[in-house]
Amino acid sequence: MGPDARSARAERDETMACLDFDRSPFVIAWELTRACAYACAHCRADAQPKRDPRELDTAEAMHLIDRLARFGTKPILVLTGGDPLMRRDLFELARHATDCGLRVSLTPTATALPTRKRMRAAREAGVRRVAFSVDAASPRAHDLFRGFDGSYARTLTAMDNARAEGLPIQINTTVCAENVGELPRLVGLLEEWKAVQWSLFFLVPVGRGARLAMLSPRSHEAVLEWLCDVSQLVPFDVKATAAPQYRRIVYGRLHGAAGAGYRFADGLHRPPSGKGVNDGRGFMFISHTGEVMPSGFLPVSAGNVYESDPVDLYRHSPLFRQLRDPDALEGKCGRCEFRSVCGGSRARAYAVTGDHLASDPSCPYMPADCARIGT
Image (tube, rainbow, N blue to C red; front, top):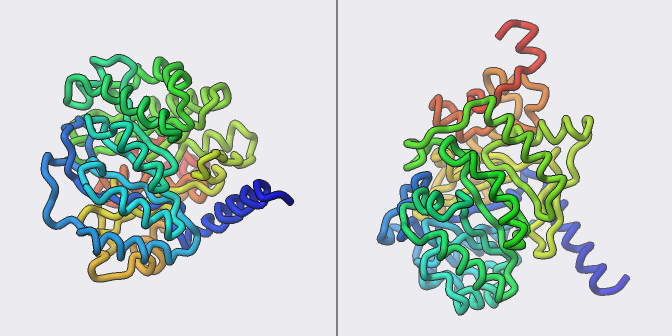
């Protein structure tokens, strides 16, 4: 076996090791800061122009990285915000995380900051992928969503800078009633931009996003079915975030078989659809002040990294253990035959009902058990 084959096999083994979600998250999103120059209509963080003095400082952040590496499964570490480029120690932190074996990605805001020089610094620090947000195909519609004229043009420039430095591009799109009509037009643009993944974030009404309108349950279903069709035709991966019922649709289209996941050249592989990541199940969020949560869209804290070990919180806190137990779910989600595959968006359930175990209000599917007993 040659060195390239051994490397690919090692990557595959590491990915499979990450699939024991009781032991390790597949993805850790770390909100380095809430500072951001934009005022996006959907921002779950309600980002502010200036940095919060309560943010972890460089030494504290380095120590946190050391502790996250103790998961031992090389999870993906998403450095996010706000705008992570607002921290001057960003690349120092990214390098340390890379040296500790974490697989690092970056989600900067498309201001004037993601220059080619900074994208080179990101690559040299070990960042494997950069994700930019595009919420509409037309510049005007995107700029209205972002609250900043010229943000669309700056996004294109930032993508050019990242590609020029050999960094793979991911496109994140928030999906809500205001922009759902833009989605078909974005497909061709993602091909032009040579994106490796389209990650669609179905609106959870938190932060500033609480002022936007979610899709109806039937519209959620229709868009997810359309995405499933699109995913078979495009050269990039399609991922639905905060819409775990997408896995039910994929499962049905494959006649009862789970999707095989997606493998990327940058090593940020996506697990099979039958082993889907969900809030607190394969996913952990760390806020700018060190709060450990199941998701950035589910603002319920299991504890703080200043007081507790994040590995211990993920593995043993009552909140995370509950979210990994499909039998703890309530309402029709708790009786659904797909609860282990899907589980519903715990964040949306909490945002709408105040109960993170309640049924996901975005899903129109009626489980056979519910139909039988008339609930």
